[in-house]
Length: 283
Image 1 (cartoon, rainbow, N blue to C red):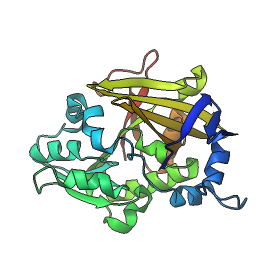
Image 2 (tube, rainbow, N blue to C red; image 1 turned 90 degrees about the vertical axis):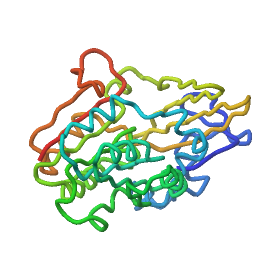
Image 3 (cartoon, one colour; image 1 turned 180 degrees about the horizontal axis):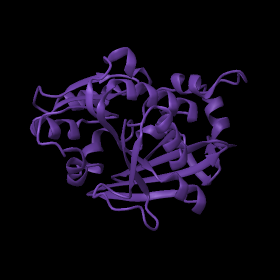
Image 4 (cartoon, rainbow, N blue to C red; image 1 turned 180 degrees about the vertical axis):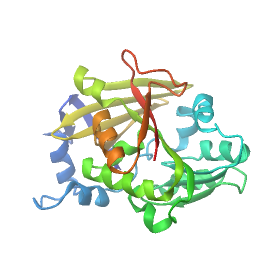
């Protein structure tokens, strides 16, 4: 994931970079982010992409995405202390809140700079690691966690179905047998069916965050446009639009036997159009 400071989006499927037009995947090739080697898998491309998803929002992350009390309540369902892993923890606000509720919390993110903010929040409780979500088995023992969290559409940052399956199988191994996996992902079934090109705009104080999307082959590009004091910075992020049936199938393959789907963190049933899918899965 990388920052492109001089991009204009002039059509949903075209980029204008220094007055030249490219489709989004061609732009990745031109920038050297994806190689033209036809034998290279999407997974290898994912490994080589500089992970700077937060770059244009890193200083404003907690303003744009404050801690959601409903999300905290969704996780904090046990009256006893649990060991919890938060994948894609960003600034660690959820990790710190769970720690203060008596839980032992580990947060991981692939972006080292965002973790500097997480570590600087004033207490020594949560542990943070700069770690690729595909490398859980190499870093954690089997049957370690009571809960594993993967919120904020983190799972869509994996490059394809194969990588999602690999992640879920590794995650299942470090989750206790009676543990639960909790996930938040954009409802891509709705996005693809309705041709939704924009997620809801976020406006906080003098900040405006717009998120545009376009689909190219089996990959989706999301362009985050941050407006602050009249200045605009755009970040380009490749995403994999994983559908619910794909995710459900891969969870079952990874050993999960009970899966629940909600439309929000209040555990409302998925009726009508809802922009996010919230899942709970047990082994």
